[in-house]
Length: 517
Image (cartoon, rainbow, N blue to C red; front, side, top):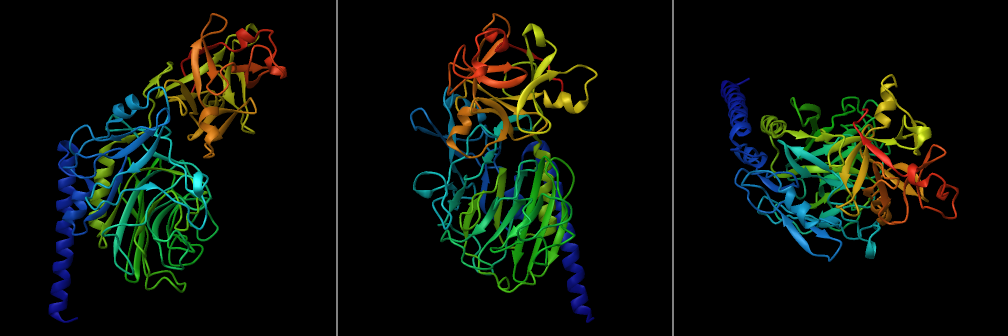
């Protein structure tokens, strides 16, 4: 090759290496002094953030504004939830205080970039949502608790029918303009519905044809494209297709990913795009695809429209599920070096879902609930292995690990009343103890208005004078009870067999024990 071209390439490679080293060094300092956030790193790489959304932390070192807004059910009042200090973590205590004794939803996810690209309730699109007017539901503000660097925070829990959108944005890529995006998701909360996305979408709320979207997708849908293994996969929603690589359907290079906290990256420019991913708690990013646009007509050039979506598809398809903690969109196609430095910043942030205690009814603690009736003092409330029912069975030191795990619960703030409690399965994250037709079950949030109430129980002194009882928030005359070893909410007398008065006080009294799992 001509010497001048060769020299230019050498200098470009050297420059990229120096950028990577500089960004990584800056990120190492960040972990100690909080001197940079992800968007500071993108700006240093020449691809600044044009949207920055997080309910857990500031994404700029200097950001001191609100992260999100909550609305409480008791009086429809709203409050912004900000950071503890500039560049710091969410002030979750402000949410806890504001929402005490009632429930809250997340109404706004603020854009930290200064572009005003805030996310609010997604309005009716081609596909209607379940809320009034065909709009989408808003996320329960307490359903996705985490810690970040030891600080309590809350993510955005997307049940079916939940979605956020902004159709009137500023600075977001349109047409074939280059852009990048990343998001941190809960890698254990997904399904095959369409479509749990974050990124660039149509401004119309309709399917406007191939190439009118560019969003990062997470789930195990195989209706369009898919990768190796059983899923879930990180893919790109480019409209009328979830793409795992250059091929329309299967691409072996896109692996199943199973991290509890998952970094998911998509970026695209003129006839080039990439998928990358990694563990948001440790390690580096891997590249799952990098190359030309899909070998299907309509995607080169792209026809992006520049809206932003979270939790839904571009036409308001809203059957997907997932949990979102933070994400950004950039102007320009970020280098791998820049993204690697952002990943180092993410892992240094210290995301964790570890329980914060054991054996107490404090949100974040792990517990097991032991029966107190004379027949059954070796039995604990647990979910069944074969179905979604909840029952009691004997658990002891020699029990299989799966049995111990099934009898272990994580205490959460009550989804319908934060002064009460919700119990999340320890071994099936995202699935909650709830009653349905008065029968106890283990279910994922279905997005319906009744679920939060069905999954909320208020602790009271044990009805027998021993331990604690757990009163249904929407049926206050009924408590969690075991009856013939099955689980119910039951009254002290009533029309159902499990409302029998015999031993009701004992059957509804539980010892809060150290967790088996």
